[in-house]
Image (cartoon, rainbow, N blue to C red):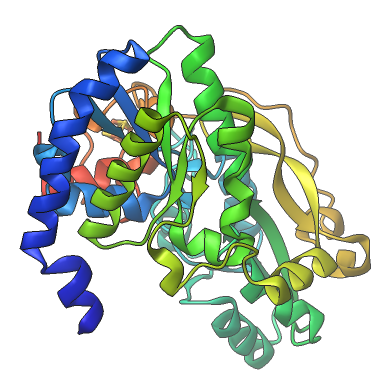
Length: 380
Ligand code: SF4
């Protein structure tokens, strides 16, 4: 209740921060010589807060809040979904959360089973679970050859790692890793804006819950290497407004920093060291494919050799194919996740693609920008 009162329902504070943003933004815009001060959020939940609470409508003309690649469902490559569908059709029990409705690049083709939902409709044993623990319990009971579709960022990964480390995973449950890391993708997006000649990103709002694991310090490369302020914030509207103001203040003063502004209630500078150790014991860094984007070096995790008996790819001989463009025709999800386009720029938004019948991956999860905009409007 105290948090609600402070960070959600405190309209006086929201008004005061917004006024300061309006005062500072035109000055900063002149100082940095950019008509638009582009601020990227990484996390799908920040996009949710920004859109749900109409924060874009509170921004001055000069400040643009853009979404980033922080939705694991949106960025899981089609090849991974196709591999897991194939295993389901071959008789494995497949456990998933989040990926049930996501379609592959081939789903519109005749004779292709284009999603795990379609596989289940055809008789495959696809089970939706809330967590890896649920899958473990169920696989123990069934004793059937099973595969868990492991998606997520650093927030989810410790919950997998600790169960492997504590030997809680039964031998009949394999793990198909599609785990991703946040910082390399955020860096990729920022570099892309620069290299494509777009208005460069001037500030980054770092993901709050990911930072509770990896630490606010993980974002120090933005000020150090790119001279871009990075602010870790929470998930209430005033958290985000305060983050925007801090970025403007940094740009104005020239003291470009990474800050754990006011989310100290959750995030420590060093993060959760216990969780980091557990992750490193069980998982190793790998190059990973991001849907519609391609391979980003060292941006994913897979099981270490010690746990290879659980590694679905290794145990079932699944070979990684080179990335091929993997969004359904017309879908601009890659541009949306990289902050180059808004969902409403896609001609299929709320026409051929809706939350009830998603065509592309950004319309599936509540962290996908298209799904968020579909439910709460663009707030422009
Ligand atoms: Fe893709 Fe649908 Fe979003 Fe368009 S509206 S970019 S088709 S997910």
